[in-house]
Amino acid sequence: EPEVTQTPSHQVTQMGQEVILRCVPISNHLYFYWYRQILGQKVEFLVSFYNNEISEKSEIFDDQFSVERPDGSNFTLKIRSTKLEDSAMYFCASSRDGADTQYFGPGTRLTVL
Amino acid sequence: GENVEQHPSTLSVQEGDSAVIKCTYSDSASNYFPWYKQELGKGPQLIIDIRSNVGEKKDQRIAVTLNKTAKHFSLHITETQPEDSAVYFCAASSNTDKLIFGTGTRLQVFP
Image (tube, rainbow over the protein chains, first blue to last red):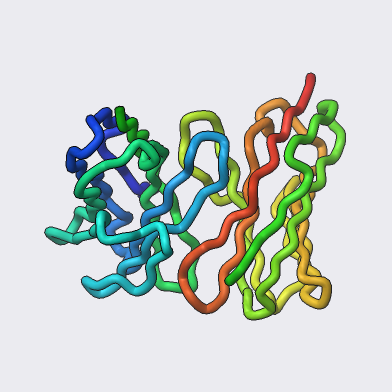
C-alpha cells in the first residue's frame, strides 16, 4: 500500500539555523500538507499546497516558513531561522484531491537547541 | 475559525468493553469528519471518516455517528482489544482542505 514517507526521522539543530524537512507524498496525489504537533498537544495545520502554490496557510506559517515541490516527487518544508518554539513533530500529508482523505507520514521530530 | 472540542482526554476500559469518544465542532460549514489513531512515535493513521450527508458509518468494530444539528460526532469502538490502546484524534474540515484537529483522547485498554 502506498505511503507518505518523511526524512529525516529526527533532526537536531541550533537556534537560528535553517532546516529543511523532506516528504515524498503518495505518487498520484495532488494536494500536499504540513502539520505540526508540539509534544503532548494536538496536531495543528500549517500549510496546504496544490498546483505548485500555497492554497492555504495558518497564522503559524509566518515568513520563516516556506514550502517547495522541487521535483516530481519531493515536497519540502524549510524553516529559515529556527526558534526554540519550533521544536515539534512535523507531519507531511497528501490527498488525491482537496476534499479527499489525507494520509499522513510518520513525521520528523525537530529539536531546536 | 473552526474549533473542535474532544472529550474525554483519557479513557480507560477493560478489554471487551466499548469505548466512546465525543467531539463537537463550531463551524456549521464543516462537512468532513475523519478520525485518526496515533500510536507512540508514529503519524496519525485514518481509521474511519464520515461526510455530512450521512448520519452513521460502520467498519467492523468501529463506528462513527454524526449529528449535524447539534454539531457533534462520536467514535464508537466495540469489543476493545489491547492493541486499540493509542491516542485518538477527531478532526473537521469544510470545503477548504485543512483539517482542524481535536485535542486527542488517550485510550487505554486493560487486558
